[in-house]
Each structure stands twice: as structure tokens, then as C-alpha cells.
Image 1 (spheres, rainbow, N blue to C red):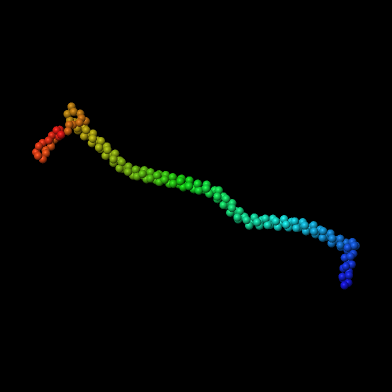
Image 2: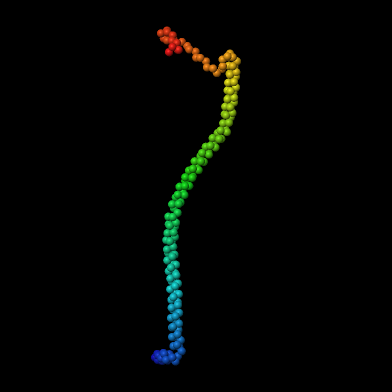
Length: 172
């Protein structure tokens, strides 16, 4: 009890201002309250930032997918059009490639057939030479008064009918 009595006297003295301990405790609480308000402000600011960052992190995949979807929606029609153009060009190029391949094979076959063309040329020369010889012999054998290219009258033959009568071709 002695301690209790001393304690209450101590408080009484502190309240009367006789002890500097009371003053120290009172100013410490005020300082603590000011410090607590500043600390609370900083803590609230930090928690708000953390909350905002967590919200962004949690929603970032959704936002990324939204951006991807938006990009695809805008660029897909152009990509489809470009794809069709590329397919058309590919068909044209493939057709041209087949044409050039066919033409190349034709030229190679022509080169292989040069021997046949040479034989044809030789045969044509021989035919022209023979024609000249035949014309020369015809010119020598015909009399000088009749031209070579003049038409010759057809020979009319008598036709014999089964009854034994002869029919002239001019009479018909």
C-alpha cells in the first residue's frame, strides 16, 4: 500500500506541475499523435498504391486480351484481303511457270528435232531439183509452138452401154 500511496502522491505532484515527468508525458503524447497522423497518411498512401497495383496486375491479362482482340478485329479484314490477293498472284505465277516450262520443253524438243528438219530441207531440195529436171525434159519433148502451161483438151471416150449402143459423152 505504500506503493499505492506514493503513486497517487506522485500523480498529484505531477498534475500540479511540480514534476517535469508530467510535462514530458504530455508532450510525448502530442508528438505521438502528430507522428501517428503522418504515419497514418503515409500508410494510407502506400496501401492505396499497393491496391491500385494489385488491381492493375489482376486486370492486366484481361486488358492485354482486350487489346489483342481489338487489334485482330481491326487488322483481320486487311489480312484476309491480302491473303486473297496473294493467292490470286500465286495462281497467276504458277500458270506462268507452267507456260514457261512447257515452252522450254518445246524448244528443247525443237533442238532435238533439228536433224528431222535438216532431212526435210534435203528432201525439199531434191524435190525442187527433180521438178526442174521434169520441166526441162517436158520443154525438150514438146514442140515449140505449144506452151507448156496451156490446158490440154480432155479425151472423150465412147461409153458402151449394156445394150451395145455407143453413147458419146458430148451428147449428154
